[in-house]
Amino acid sequence: MKKERDFMELVPIGIFHTPYRTKDEAPRQGRHSEVVAYIEIFEKYLEGLKDIEEAKYLIILYKKFC
Image 1 (spheres, rainbow, N blue to C red):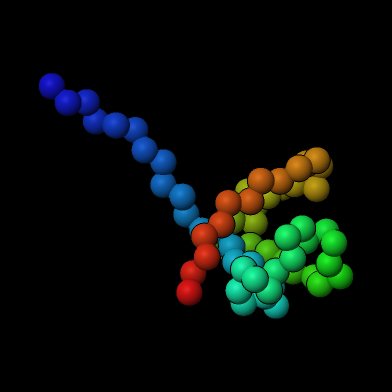
Image 2: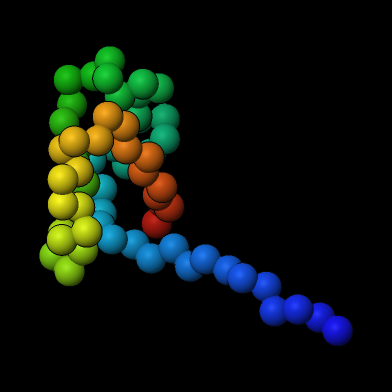
């Protein structure tokens, strides 16, 4: 008998804002650039980021949409 598998659904919680439009335009390491990019978090998810400034590292998962 087959068992139902557990799965995880990733849901976007924000959007990147950057002047780069292609991978070739972006620097290999962003820390070597003066360009400022930022992530806008959708309002309904802001509460989930409480105390985020205390984190030493953040892992950002993203998907490019064309």
